[in-house]
Image 1: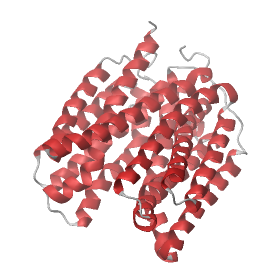
Image 2: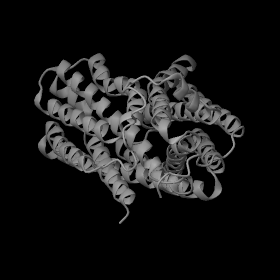
Image 3: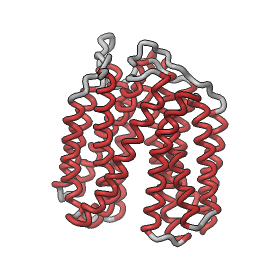
Length: 401
């Protein structure tokens, strides 16, 4: 078996374990903080958002560092932070230590996902890159879905703290798996000092129109995904439409299945038909899904809309990084992916605040509907800027096959 294929399988195994571990604790984390630490809601919010806050500021410098020293050491360091964070969450009875644990856990996951996208993109030429990234991220999402499902049973049967002990074990296995990664054609660069800050020349290679537009697309789509569909929709569905929690859980599952499908199909088709066409198709699906949420109130129509929403997110999440990887040279691809993921995390932070503000300002059921309309308008804006792009091709013919 070719060495790059072995590396790819190792990245898939490590990524699936990482996402499985995240899914194992994410759904129960807020309830765990509330019940185990009798924390006020403000501290619960800090504990939850702490994972994302420093993760947002970690993505870019990690991408810069990986370009200069290769992927292996940052990957190992990230998994070590995840092991420490998970074990501290299991062990501690101090809320501030718990918050610190989640912060370093988020930094560790930032290291894996930023470098994972970058490294997988370097293992394949442009003609195969979309499919490789799509499969890589689809399998990760399956891991997250399984983690959420199994983690719920573990929490119910053994208590929520047991989830963190199990997650620590998974993190150790993921750490072991990344130690086998060799970093094919990824020798550390000797021309520059190791630094978390890129040079001006490196930034000039990264900041082209394709990268800038892809980052805007990622930011806005994360605002929609986390703000509209992760924050507003659960309240709207359960309080205004009257769905039960169990029914809403099925809607989330349908969205996850759609995301897996979107990653797989979008990645494969983008290699054959071009990134731009597939992203535009993804936006069209997103328009139908978001607008449909303002029309339908029945469970089964909403199930279909959530499946389509998942396809929309899966296509964008799978194709956009391939678009960026095509548009930048190998030696600065980590910076490109790091920039991309920083905007994604930023959208995750901004989205809930922006969408909830719309709901509160407008008020009532109309406020919820207007927030969905705002999501539709944002997608129309993304279509407009995507139409200005050209499809990219690999600039480095020496990329391994």
